[in-house]
Picture (cartoon, rainbow over the protein chains, first blue to last red):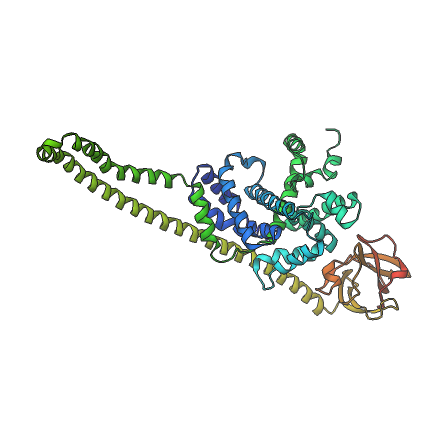
Amino acid sequence: MPDTSLISLPPAAEAELVRRLQARDEAAMTLFYDRYSAALYGVIFRIVKAEDEAEDVLQEALVKIWHAFASYDPGKGRLFTWVLNICRNLSIDKIRSRQHRVGSRTQGLDESLTAQRQAAPTTFRPEHIGLQEITQKLIPEQRLIIDLLYFEGFTQSEVAEELNIPLGTVKTRARTAIKVLSKLIR
Amino acid sequence: MENIQDYIESGILEQYALGELTPAQQSEVAGLAARHPEIQDELTQVQQALGFYAEAHAITPPAGMRERVLANVMAQIATPASALRADVDAVAQAPAATRTPLASAAPAAEAVVRPLSSAPVAEPAGRSVWAMAASVALIMSLAANALFYSRWQDANSDLVALQGDQARFATTTQVMDRQLGNLRQENQVLRNDEFRSVALAGTKTAPSAKARVLYNASTKKVYLDVKSLPALPAGQQYQLWALDNGKPVDAGVLTVATATGAGLQAMKDIASAQAFAMTVEPMGGSISPTLSTMTVIGNI
């Protein structure tokens, strides 16, 4: 199924971008921004849930990507996977430090999920076709687990605790959900 | 490694991809993935699936953010900018450097101010005119470079934006093509006289439930069209059964989209049937129907 690389770069274009970043070509950061900012901002915003903080994290992430680029190994995975991890980690650090400051462990589950629903755009946007498909194919309980793991930065044990279900069930559901997503790509 | 499949199914690759593991565990997974292609393949699939999930949640950043963020990022990473500034500083320092020894020399020769100041100054003044001309030329050239550089960057980013648009349109077209294909297929089924429509009415467990089966006895094809079905609790799924001489034959489970009436679903081929019925079964379906959960039924 070819309609999955919604915004990820075709391999040749990605290789070119990687080459330019390795050559320390600063102009390539503009290309990088134009290509990946929507995907990265989407993830960051869904984790930190505030526009100004999301902007700070994205900026921090771009600087980090630039400086840490030497440690990226194209042989081990795609550029998108690597930068996505950097953004997720920075965002999760951000909410952890915030929770630490406020002293509460997590936002209530209901509250955080409401925030996500509000963030979802209602108008038709072609880039959200993938999302419609996901909504159709993942059953709600699978989607909830993936959202908690991916966008709330929960560990599998924390999910089990939060939803009050056995850890084994969390693992199975997470695996099944990821399998469903993999099928959507192929 | 004894059992690669067990390792894959332990869920550790998902934890790796989600960033849940300690650095030690991470390097263990990375090491195993490097040695066993099956593990690497599975890991790549997991990472791509999560990447796909992330991309599907893309949000276009608010207006004005691009310029702010890029300007700040460029300011933090720029090396040529600081090199440029160093050049400009050097140019700016050049006249000052010729001036400093003069200033210190002047008070030392208070008595003969006039001859001193006119004679030795003449030469540096000539040089400083050249230096000034050179620095003006350099500054103009730097300004021109900056202008061309920014135009080149703009052109580059316009190109990327257009490529992005084009990729999105291509995606939309592909999805629309697929949806159109589905609709064509549904239309063919609906217009085909060989398909008999079998109305399925709600049982007393769900009186308002309604669906129909389109059955082609010669090609054995079965399509299902849901009008309305009660929503199911998590972990359960509707399953269609064909009844052949009173014996239930599995005709497949309904996807979530079908159960909510999104469109026709092709079910399993059925060789012969006199009636169709639907029951509620655990996710994935059952081998034999749970009759107490029968939701709709209809005779051909």
